[in-house]
Length: 540
Image 1 (cartoon, rainbow, N blue to C red):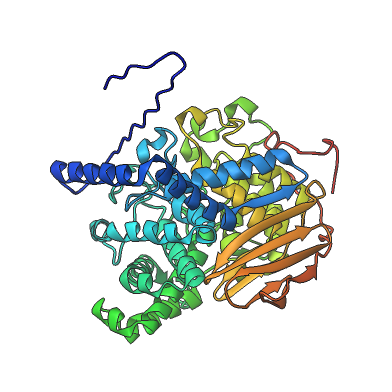
Image 2: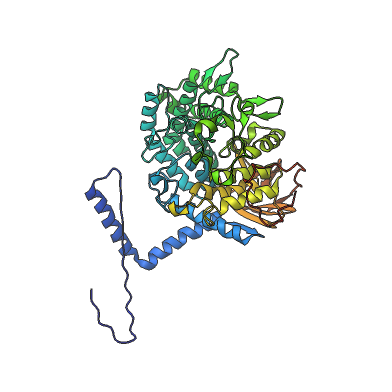
């Protein structure tokens, strides 16, 4: 194209570029896809495309934004989080959400359990349409998971710990195949999404089948002992420094939920369940295993063990470990890590967040205090989860420190590897630390509850969640929390254990109680999170 311009005259050029890809379609079909996209874009025009993008993002921010007063750095970071997590997932188009999203080559595009356990919880309450698509993608890989189980001599499905297209890409057994908890993580995401949206079409078309085949894995993998108790032996939980363990509590409580959810879904859809070969005997067996599953507990210490016998292991020599020897996995043999009390990332603590209904408040406080000095956070996934439970048990300043670590993981390049791409799951952990941590949001069954408390550095926190075609805004100050229904019919929620009915006519409020007075837990020497907004010697 050529054009002659007079002095001072301007030329406006609009150039439209489209791309297409497919793992299944032929090259001519992909070209047709691109041609169609170009034709549509030309018809819509630049301003039209811009308006469509603006409309999409405006709708997202209206339902997902998080506002806080008292820390402008965290405010910027949480919006950075929301944008990049949405960008990674909004147009996944039946492909996995990779650990680095669209931001870099790290992990070669692989996805992990991070997706279901960290990324999808955030999106379930902010952009639920994205979650349905991501879980349907998991469902398309079910044939590979069924074949993997067959290779291992197990029933049901074994989903891969690390994958691109559904096949297991991890060759290392202890940290890969033995991390069977990925099955329960997928089931957890299915249960959460279905309960939060009421999407029964998804449940019938994909959710039920995912729940059935993941439940069959647990019943095949586990066994009843002479007392009738149900055990899951030889597994690896989220803490990859403790592999091939018996009765990992995280795995067991998540499998317990998986087994019950499969039985419940089969009862709701008996016709489809029957087509999958589920009968009353199998459903009863699932419920029995869930009822009798073992959660190891050390009576002398008064804490749940991360796995059977964990608390009897030798404690890692933290005092003798120089700062430059972290992360431990790069400097010490796994053999040594596996037989010591040292924790890479939140494991027992993560179980208390996702299955908080399975533990008393006293157990949560005691467990958190015990495992905090053993957790070195050699994973970017850890800080957000630790923030949630630190806030729940009343250690608000510590939770605030962990929030800072999660939110600045990439913005401050804390692990010195942001060049490989952003830590998408850790970013999602920023939202979780704020909403589930300081907002105290929990969703168990049909109940949405909040138990908010703010650290002194944050004077106000406001966020919006979507739940069953309702949109609820939560405004929290140091003294009270106010709940406003923006869209939908009235909704009953719980505020610090008390029921409140939120309607469009008027917001409802509840007081924010003071945090319990508990001793401040310690971290391994040199592994405490950076303190934010207070002197280093401050104690709560």
